[in-house]
Image (cartoon, rainbow, N blue to C red):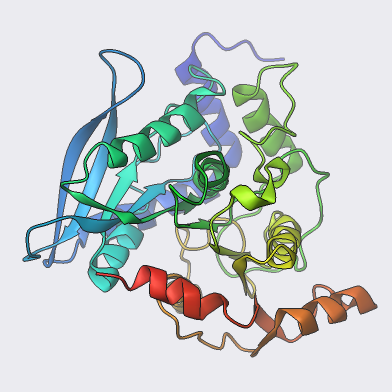
Length: 347
């Protein structure tokens, strides 16, 4: 076994192990950050944390020319495997949300392992929600939504349940994982146009870095599946590619939320893997990325090469053995998008 002389060397080894997916994603990300819309202001702020003398780095996105007064706010946390410093990789997404919904978007950093193992990251996520509530002069506290990508989405789901529906009014996770403790499951598809598939070995490496034994992954601060279902907000949006290893967990979690009366929406994206919106290899993936962002903010459901049907029909087909190969891409209940759209479109 190789001996690592420093934490940074350990991280370099991780990046070399993942090779092309990380390099391709980085190239696309730099392009996105270089093309910030002229109508969006982005500035860096420092938010206070629970630790005296320490702050959290935040990129704040806001549409130019907005009137004074508190604005609805969305907090975003990037993907990282809980290890990689990726603040800024969601630049195009944050710009899109700020421009299309007139929300202030806070793209928030959080501490990474192995220097800062669990619960450092989730503490930073919760501290950012607390920060928003300390500034009612800037943020409309009746319209607070949170979300994120990959590890950031997983923590956002946990934070929503920890905070409760009176604090967080909607949560969205794009290729997050509601159940880190669950067994690994093969995705519905092995073929994909964008993104990358994470091997079990790499996934174990991530988890070993951040979760120190004997820490259980079946903890509501790590896996949102284990949180009381009534602690989630009414509006929940989940999305991931059909070639993503977390697809089954997202499908199952949407079913559970919906059965409990939540307005949960699951968007399944054909022929895309983990991080598809960052590792855009062709125009087809770019279109799917754009559609996913549109669904996130709009009540109009686009048809992604398939029909939109009721969640009840989807589940009956699933139980009949056609779980991952049914001819549609978005599962929803009857009122999910009406409610989600009303929440998002508040000004």
